[in-house]
Amino acid sequence: MVKLSTLRINPDNPRLIKDEKFEKLCSSVKDFPKMMSLRPIVVDSDGMILGGNMRYLALDHLGYREIPDEWIKRAEELTQEERRRFIIEDNVSFGEWDFDILASDWDIEDLNEWGLDFPEKKELFEDEYEVPEEDEIETDIVPGDVFEIGPHRMVCGDSTHADIVFTLLQGEKPFLMVTDPPYGVNYDASWRLQAGIGTSGALGKVMNDDNADWREAWSLFPGAVAYVWHAGLHAATVMESLHAVKFKVRAQIIWVKNQFVISRGHYHGQHEPAFYAQRPGVDDQWRYAEEHEVLDYSVRDGESAGWDGDRKQSTVWFIDKPMKSETGHSTQKPVECMGRPIKNHTGEVYDPFLGSGTTMVAAHQLGRRCFGVELNPKYCHVIIERMRAMEDSLKVVRNGQPYNG
Figure 1 (cartoon, rainbow, N blue to C red):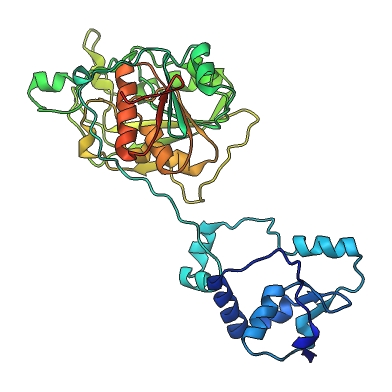
Figure 2: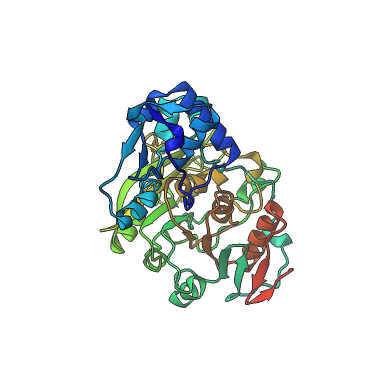
């Protein structure tokens, strides 16, 4: 047996312990004393503790006066420099916890009692902001304006123009692109009112919706991973546009909505689209399967995916379409659609087609920085108002000056 009084606390020990953690340590020593022989206190030839100062304090607090020999490891052969190094490296954690595996294989309460603190997970939620009709929006924003919205940055302009993207990024290199570009389907939802099957909601015609190939925008993105929503009808075009700028498509993800919305087709898509052939000359608006959305997950050749998700991710996403998504922006996605890719990867976020700002909203909720481009000055105004509605303390700066518009 070794008398506890023969050991000396290191007066220069850089480690601290809070009261709550100390209580957990004492409980651990009391309930699982075998751990002490598996992780003994390390002392030098003079009995000064190099590793295990907190365990020593716990033993003293618990009333121990003597401890078994195997609870002590003597490091008498270390030089002075090696002793200094050991004090640090013994307390450094080089690895990280996989909290998904921990949650699957251990009881959370046990883990907390053993001194492991789970990080507080940020959750996505649908914000309460309702996007107004485009005709109702008044703004003094003009193309070329650059905004700092809290930690985020937005530019009003065309994301296929290098000067606009350069102005936005200013040397920053966001890793992840999550975007919902115009689909190339000439989408115009106002027909529902004209047909008498809608009374309010998403009526805006999508700008630039005669193009599905946005390779110019993809080429200006400096990062490695892209999630691109698109229409199933133009999947081949979108895939080719990504391949052209060195992206390799790894998966196609399907968003399954909880209900369909009446379209002008013979089938109202909700899960997997099916092409319904029509004679030439018929308006092909119906072929846009409104209740089935497709998302390409792409990684630039030679780059890491920066994967931060668990091993339970499916290519089918069952995400309800919020009723209030029937707002002024006709193709607005639920926050979860843009947020799930952000949760599953590391790094800052880029969206060359911000629209009503859902990607920025999701990034903000998850504590991530977003860089975005929006062509329409009115929707730039919407994005600012939406972000302010979510967090009224956000400071907004336009072109270096405080902006209150």
